Length: 265
Length: 265
Image 1 (tube, each protein chain N blue to C red):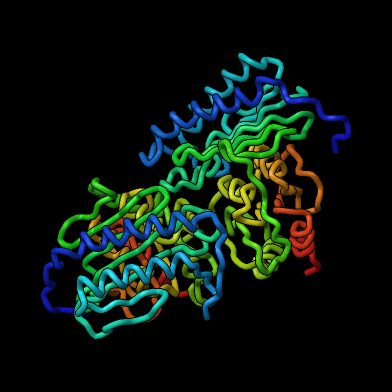
Image 2 (tube, rainbow over the protein chains, first blue to last red):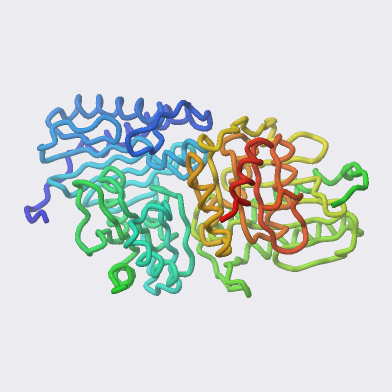
């Protein structure tokens, strides 16, 4: 865990992130509901032309404005991976939704300092909903300050997760325990669920086997709205390699969810 | 199965359905993302104030315009259940989504003649998307004619279902076979998925243990766009009691999906 004091965000960082999200919107809108050409990556997740076009554009912007920064993107890999400041780009998080005409997808942009994400933008291009946070400023949906829920009772809590098939075999019974303890469970919302958590509409978001670019933007947004994000061991999420995430509206609910996910089977 | 010739829809039926959907929008918008009071019905599905307010209003309209028609609603039960013409009302299909701020819900209105639904409206109040069909006119999204996809290859098909936990134990392996055969599977979209199927964005919609008011509006919309809707035995869906549904973009794909759902285990 990083123990050095965290610096201020570069002044141009949030405006640049918003500009990139604006430009992503206009590209993504052109491809939405066209069932565009799909190729299969090694992990068989669908990836679209729009995905690549958006990431290429974002990289150009970052290289111009912050040539010394690192970049990690879903589509085009790493640049300056050892830099203190690093951008994490997920042009279309929820490609399965995007490809099938659902609104449950978004563009994600994050900026981290030595592994701690300090800026996050989650943008839904079609509904024009944008959740954002740039530490130390609190999280917003557009111009509106947002806040996570105060629900600390698991039996009242709303749980979202992206894919019931994403869990490892030993995670399935743990997740099932949590699912059976909460009021209701919904699936397949990807980053849109992080927005719903940050604005107090849902209470828990659990994911398994996700990549750093899936979660990097969600951490500042959820935490900037009063929530908490850790891995399944209760540690700060790593921005290296695949991981498992428990995000909650507040620390009480988080502790209860974590206890079920860690329960002896 | 009904073998009598089907009559024309009453001329006022579709305009009335659209008026009711318009009024439902303004009520539902007031309650969306307010996390309103929730009570638990016998089946523990959440039901909101908005749900009841919309259905009460719709019933008033129908009773005024078509006093001899039957009405079956999610919230307030049956009126004239023996009438030839019967309205099926689902003020908020996808209450779990509605309650948690997701856009994956909608208002559903159907009119059936002796058990065959001839008119269907699926309305998303927040995004203002409205799928509708009034036999014999083809299905539309707003003013735009829509058409299901021509995908007849299961390995390329996109499958949606509302809840991975909705299946009976003996249905689980059958659904799993289908899920493993298709290109991708998404969940938790309720009636919104029927709209995506009708407009060619997805190819298969499979549901289990759903009520007639869940499906009645979807049948004319999907079939009016070129698709096919049956139960898991390949028969026309019954509008009596709970049922299991396979909706497909075309008959070829439907036959392939049905074969997997009916496979010997």
